[in-house]
Length: 225
Image (cartoon, rainbow, N blue to C red):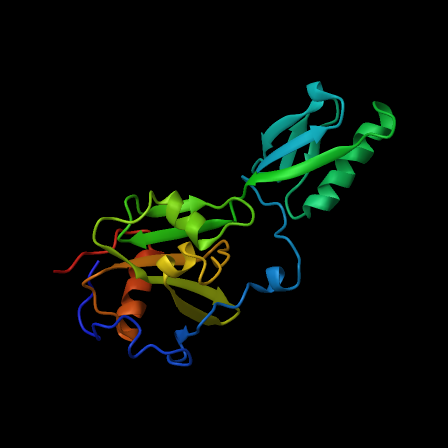
C-alpha cells in the first residue's frame, strides 16, 4: 500500500505529540479503560465459551452464547451469560450444578473467541480482514492472523489505531525491532486497526486519516503506485 503525499521517511513528520482533534500520534498506545483497570471484557453474545467441570468430563462443553445472551449446558440447561464477567459466570455455573447434581463442583470457564475482540488488519499483508482475537494477543499475533507481511511490506511502517474514549490514537511500530527483542510486542485489543505500509510508501498524518477511514469499513486498502 503506497498512499500519496507525505514524506518518504515513515514518521518524519509524525513524531509523538503530532496530530489534531481527530487523530493523535503517540509513541505507545494507551490501553483501553477496562484493560488499564485490570478488568476483563464481559461475555458477549456470539462468544465461544469453553466450560470444564473438574473430574466430570461428560459435562464439559464448548458452547456459543445465543442471541438471548444464554448458554445451554448439560443437566442445568440455559444459563444467562452475556454481560457477566468470566468469574461471575463460572460461579453461577458452579452454583447451578451444586444445587441438584454435584457436590462441591469445580468449574472453569474460558472465552475461546470473543465477538467483541476483533481486530482489523489491512494494507500489505497476505490476507487482510477482520479477525477474532484470542485472549492476551500481541501485535505479532495480529499480523500472523493476516498471514504475515506481503513481499512489499515494510516492517518498520506498521501503524496501530485505537479509540480510547473520544480520542483516536495511532502509533508506529517497527516489527523488526520487536522480533529481535529491541522492544516488546504491544498488546492489541478488540476494535484496534493495524495497517501495514509498503516499503516505498510515504506516510503523513492525512494519509493515516484516509487509510483509517478505508480500513474501518472493512474494505481492502488501495495500492497506489
